[in-house]
Length: 422
Image 1 (cartoon, helix red, strand yellow):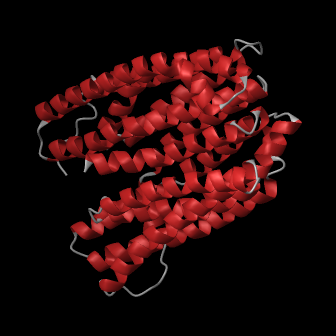
Image 2 (spheres, helix red, strand yellow):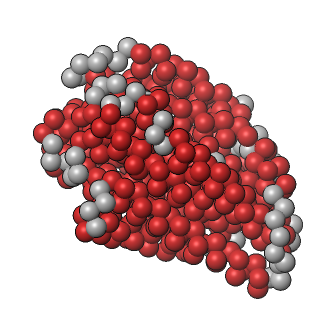
């Protein structure tokens, strides 16, 4: 299951990387505007992750009780809730598209580009949230193939639409937003259709009862708080990069897109770790649980070191891939080098996140991540506004990751999270 899960996870950040590469060749202001717009979309989707938690938990629990129709009914409820919430958020983003970039302190050119993207991409949110819920249902049904095929297809469609709409139709950054919206919506239709067909075959009557999903989401509220604190750090970093100027913000967008891709890749190890840790703790095998944690950290650290070395080696070639602008390329040389230094630390952090999620230690994760974000926010205030500011921003972000790492290692060395049994 790990390979399909990995491919599905990295699909979304690959879409962001493709957008960055296409938009980056339109100009600095457009790439910088994408950085702000992407931060907004990431925040809203990240805060809506309760759909995945709540739907997966409810579906899994009902399947475990032998109630397959009830599980599928809960999946339909989750998708309906995602559709309604996504529509409300999409309208809100479209209405406020002209104001949001100003909240980040964007220049006029960057604000126009960001607003142009947001007015259209806001309407991708219903599809994005339906995909979250539908993927949770299908994983609960042990179907990892369908989300994988849809994720890969949506990426290919997004790339084709980007090329056609940005350059062929001459729509610029608005074309990138339209391509993303169409690709996300198509993915939602296919995944949602798969769930509905399965439900119809099981004799599930149509209807919407979101109460159980919301109840399950409330039980996972600590994980939602964790996600909110992570998104808060990302928004703060983007706002700080905005005040450094368009070129620095454009370079930050590319660096952050690379980091997001690597985060999701590391998440594949963390997700596999979650299942193994939960299984062994359920069986009461503490020694084997710690052994799994040790092996997982080793695999994650090896991945991190190899990835860091690769980033350091290829960074001179990354700039021209995303932008022809020499100033942005210059910023990227420094920020990507810092990113390479952060990756091994991030590898340990993500694996230990998976360990503690698998152990059901969500409350500690929420508190630990909130502490790390609280430490990071004042760090951003000391980032200088000169040419070296972007490097110092990523130094500060590295400090944030180190705080997360310390809090997780301290917890992992204790026995407080080793709660055995069902």
